[in-house]
Each structure stands twice: as C-alpha cells, then as structure tokens.
Image (cartoon, rainbow, N blue to C red):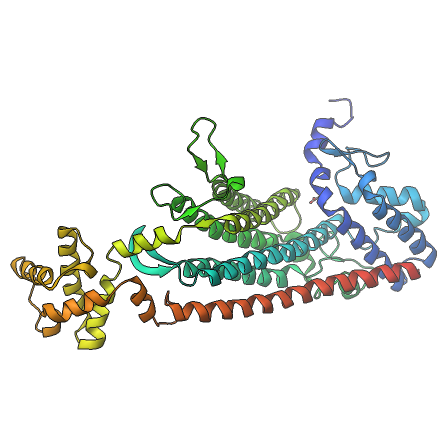
Length: 506
Ligand code: ARG
C-alpha cells in the first residue's frame, strides 16, 4: 500500500473472475464469431484470423484446466487471480499463443462492455431454455398424476376454511397451469434476451466497418440490440428473467405450503416419502417436510436476488457502470434456485402417498354442499339466489347445532331449522320451495361431494367432466410448448455448429 503496487485484496474485490467461470464458453464463442466477422469485413488478414482462431480453439478445449478454480481466483500461468475478468484472461492467452502481431488484433471494434453483455445474454438464453425444459417436465408430471386422481375427492379451501367439494386432480392442474404460465413468461423474456449486443463497443459504437448482423447470425441470435448505449448499459433482460423465475418460485412455494399443511398428522391428507423427509434428531415420531420448507425459503431468497438486481440497475446512470458486474452472481443463483426447486417439487409429488380415504371422509363430514343446496333451489325451483342462500345458511347453522352434516338432516331437523330462523327474525321466504321442509329434505338427502362434483359443469370447475377435458387440453399444451422449446434449442445448436464449420475453413 502506498508503494504503487495494487493491493491484492482490492484486486480480488474488483475481479469478476470467480463468477465468470459460468461464461467462459460463451466468451470464447463470442470471440470466434467476432474474428470471423473481422475477417469478412477485411479488418484482419486470413493469417491473423487463422492464428487467433487456432488459439481460441485450443483455449476452448483446455478451458477447464486453464481456468481451473483456485479458491475464488483462477490458476494457470497467465490467468492469474489478478485479472479483472475472463475477457482479459482469454485475450492475454490468445496474444500469448498467436503473438501480439496477430492476437493483438482480436479486440478491434469491440469492448468488454458489449462482450460481457453478450456473454450474459448467451448464458441467460440457455438458462431460460433449461428452466423451460424442467418446467414442462414438472407440469407434465402433475398432469399425469392428475389423471390418476380425477375421482379423488377432497375439500377445497379459501381462507384455509373448507369451502367446496373438489378433486385432487383440480389442485394438481391449478399448479400445472401456474407452471405453464411461468413457461410462457420465460418464453416472452427469451425473445428480449436473444438479441445480440456485440459490436456496440464501449457505449457509442465504432468507426470500423463492422457487420453486427453477421455476428448475431453466427451466434444464433434473433437480430441485434440496436442502440449501442442501450445494448451495453441495460440489464433489464436479466432482471426480467430473475423476476420470472422468482414468480415461478413463489408459485412453487405456495404448492409447498399446501403439502406441508396436508402432511401434518392433523390433516393426514398426504404422506411424504421417507427419502425426501427427514426424521427429527430428537423426536422419533416426526417426519419433517424439509424439501418443501427449503423450497419456501429459496423462493424468498430468489425474490431477494431479484430485488438486489433491480437495486443495482436502477441506481445507475446510462452507459456501463461496474456495478453491473455484481448482477452476474445474482443471476447464477437465481438459475440454480429455480432448477433445484423444480426438481425438488417433482420428487416430492412423485413419491407422495395420497390418503384418498381420509380426504373423502373430511369432505363428507363437513357442509361443503351448502352452496349446492342453494344452487338446486335456484335451478330446480326458480328461487332467487339470495333467498336460497339464506335458507342454506339456516340449514348449516342448525346442522352445526345438532352436530350432523346437512345431508344427514331429517325433515324434522329441517323444520326446526326453519322455525329457528323465524324466531331469530330471519324473514320467512315467500318462495315456497325455500321454506318447504319436504322439498328441502329431498334436496339435502340427495347431495354429497360426489353429486356435487357431478353437477359442477362450469368451465374450469372441479367437476368430474371438466377434469377430463382439462387434462387432455393441458397435455396438448405441454406438447406444443415442447416443440417451441425444441425449435429454440435447435436454432442455437445449428448456429453454433455452422460457426464451428466456418472456423475450420479459415
Ligand atoms: N468484469 C466486467 C463485468 O463483469 C466486464 C466489463 C468491464 N468493463 C469495464 N469497463 N471495466 O461486468
């Protein structure tokens, strides 16, 4: 300190070499495309291109040992821990191998600012595709599980209070739908991520006659991110990706919360497999839903990474600022969190034992059919809904008082329920059916969760018929999404394969 030599601790503080491990491959690919473009534009000789590309191919092949991690820095002769980043390291390795007269020409018409933006975009587009693949796997397994549970009756809850009779398949399909929206959200982001910033230079472009569309094409981008100030300075695409993953994780976290509650001995709706739950170190009777608890926590973490990223990008004047470097580790953590959570949830659902009998008993013991009573009065006896609702409420109250579900009430019970309503100054209904104990008894005794689910015909409802329809519709959606995803991946693979061919021909 004070001796003119940089303090290694400060160098380490500044370096992005550690997190750059994730983008080495993209950095080399970007350089290869850039060199092919420089050659085609007549900005470097075939000889220089040949020497640089030769060096880059060797670095690509040996990248694992060249950049072997050594704590938070990298080993290797030239790639010391003092380099600011991977871009600097790769360039110095190229110069060393190709000689300064050739290798020194590689960085013409670009800057690390457009280079790092390029690398991140290539990494994020691959991460999006990988995430989308896992999302479709998870959604598909939920849909397949749903077809095994089209007749598994359970209570549906609002405010955590029993609300209506439902089916376990309906719950699974609800979560599959959320995942399919997550897929769409990420696919929307993909369109904005997959634009090439390469050739934007440090901020304002270059006087050299480059061809940005050509490098974009070589790397499999759908065009360029035009404005050079925007291309180098923005990370909105990264924040969008992180936000989409965070939303997905919040969806998984809600699923996790349901299953945690259902696995309690009080509920006993499901039992988790031994290898994904862990025994307590002290209390042998316990089976803790750890995987789900970690999923909830990681969802909160992912939201934190996204918030940190927005804090970084929102505090920055236009143009590149070094702050942007710190968005990279956040992004990598977001990707890791998302993929791990999807895999975890899949394994939980795959190994979970569903206690059908228990779910059904709970659904039958409670007054989940109260709304159905009212709807029968509306449908079959032309009673206004508000009146029908009042009658059903009287029945529920009395059923509770006598400790029996409405469907087990006798005509006598119903008569006293209505009488009590009169005593409590609830207006007697002018619609005879709504105050006719015989009619009401016919309705209540014919109702149960099963009849309720048979009658439930509205689109998207828990009804039996809707389950069948939704399961096959969702299967088709998964197939359609998979083929879009395959197209995206094939396009990238195709571009990178022809990039390789072109390199060979130089
Ligand atoms: N290490 C930097 C990052 O990760 C690369 C760009 C550096 N540019 C600069 N002008 N220092 O963001």
